[in-house]
Image 1 (tube, rainbow, N blue to C red):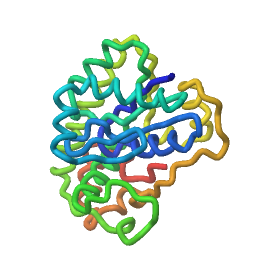
Image 2 (image 1 turned 180 degrees about the horizontal axis):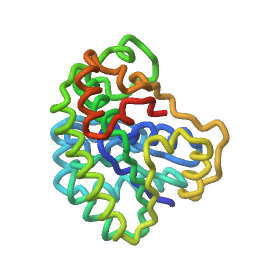
Image 3 (image 1 turned 180 degrees about the vertical axis):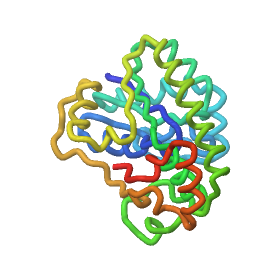
Image 4 (image 1 turned 120 degrees about the vertical axis):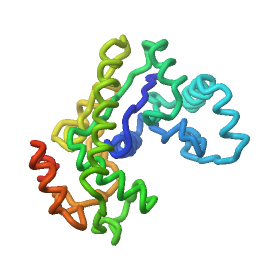
Length: 240
C-alpha cells in the first residue's frame, strides 16, 4: 500500500488537497490524525474523549502505524492523512526515519491571503465549508502589524521546512497553493501517488473569501499602504 502525509501550515490549502485526493476511488486521505483536540479514524469518525486523545499521545508513532495498518486491512491502495506543523514532533521525527513514506508539502506564497484567511477562520471557527453563505463575504478586521507578525512567522516555518525536506530521502512533492488550481495538477498528484488519474475528481469545498485579497478587509487602506511600502503590493491582487 502506498502511504503518504500531507504536511503544511494553516490556510495553505491542505484541506483542499485532502478532500481532492479523498475524491479518488483508489485513495483514502483522512484528516488531522494529530489534532490536539480529537482523534480521527480512517473512515473520518472523530473521537474527542480524553481516553482517545491520551491513548494516541502516549505513543503517536504507534497510532500512525495503526492508521496505515487499518487502511491496508480495508484493501485501500493508497492512504494518507493531513499533518499540520506543530501537531506532534514525534511524527516529524518518524517521517525522517521512514524513507518509504511519501510527503506532500503544501505552502502559500501569498502570506497576506494566508493570514487574512487564518484570522477570519479563527474568529468564526469555520475552517472549511462546502456551501457558500454569508460568511464567505464577511470582511476581516486586522491591522498591518498583526498581519506582519503572523506572515513573518509563517514564512520562517516554510523556509525551515523546505530545508528539512530537501535533506530527506523520502519521495516528496511540494505544492504552492495556486498550483493546485492549475490545469494538469490532478494528473501530477495522481502520478506522484502511483494511482491512475481519475477524470472529474474534485474537492467539495468552496472558497471562503474574495479572490481579490485587498477586498477581504473592512479597512483596506492601511493594509494597502503598508504592503505597497514594503514591496509586497502583489499580495493585494487576485490570487487565482
